[in-house]
Length: 287
Image (cartoon, rainbow, N blue to C red; front, side):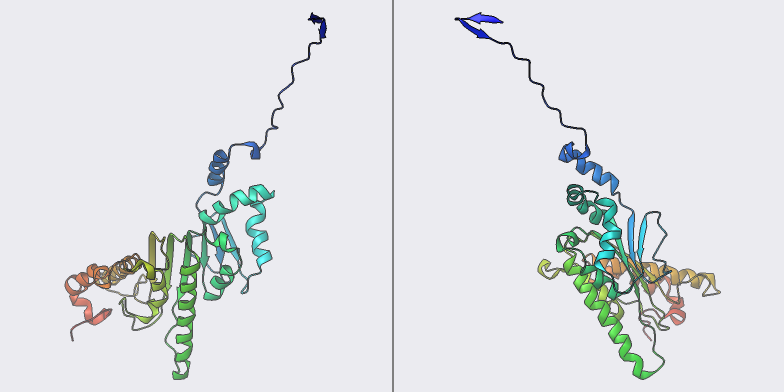
């Protein structure tokens, strides 16, 4: 005890600084974001498809939904419970889940169901989708032609809704399967109309998928399968023309005019593969 000015001064022990308990939420926000980004690495795939359907290559990290009408509770529980042990982590990480996940669909109904389940704020984080579009074949009876039109209209309405609601959509992969016997590889074909809703227009105000960066297209017809022609030169010509047409669709979606998008295809058709016009008849022949 010290005396100063007749008063006693009692020495007080130094107060201990309370340390924050170690824990994930006590890390700086920037570091937590880096961890989320690492955890939700690109490559996770969520498929909405028919049972036993194979949508592209099999991926190690994937989740499948087989029901025709999706239940919001099922989707929330399956997709998000593993990423939301507590509310704070859920709120911080949900953006990374939607940004880095590829959502794959094989029918308009499943796309519509998906668009109606998550909150609009979560849909705004979707950046990648895959569409598996089966073109309605040639009806055997005249009265069944209406179903072909209904099928096309359904895909068209749905693609328009997806392009409009997925405001941050950056990457779209499209697989088109058509079994029409007289298939034409032309960008004005009616069966391509649904995909045109993702197209970038010259007038940005008319573009729905404003954030789109890449568009990859794969076409499967009766005429580009292995072994469909016995002549290897004809087989190669058919496959190459299909590849050029796939590139043309991709270019058109990303903003190229029809003339520019079809330039390589038309050049190959009019020059390199003139001798195969009679066999393929994918485009104009001049006859």
